[in-house]
Length: 138
Image (tube, rainbow, N blue to C red; front, top):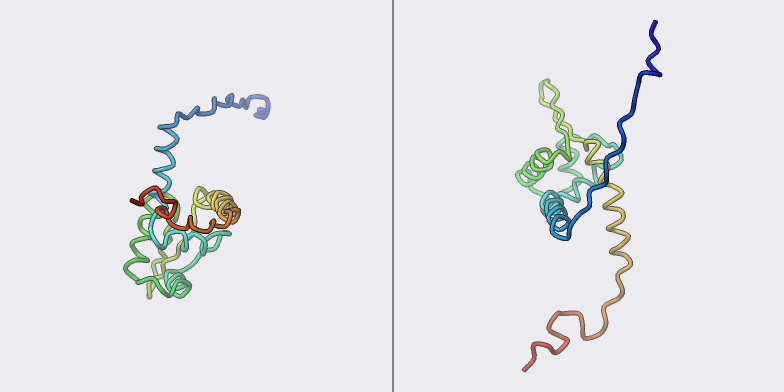
């Protein structure tokens, strides 16, 4: 029997990508495009933690969303590789949704955004709107 542990070689790690301001902005813009939509983040938070939910479970969990909008948002998340759709061929049909590994890896990034948002300083008096600083007053 041949020993394989001596033959396995690991490729050297590649150099990290050095982003320019333009490439960084383009990358973030693409991510925002994937996550934009009124309901996508709500859907993601219901699926985080390895949960597998049926379509009807998601409908009940998000009562304000229409069936058409839920289908549309789930299809876009599936197209972008964030959500996986599992179809069980039975009667009545059973469709379940779960996050892909890549979609699940989004959880820490969204948690960091939430923590960042919580550190926002309170708005100063008179600066609640953009025009309140007097720059546009005549």
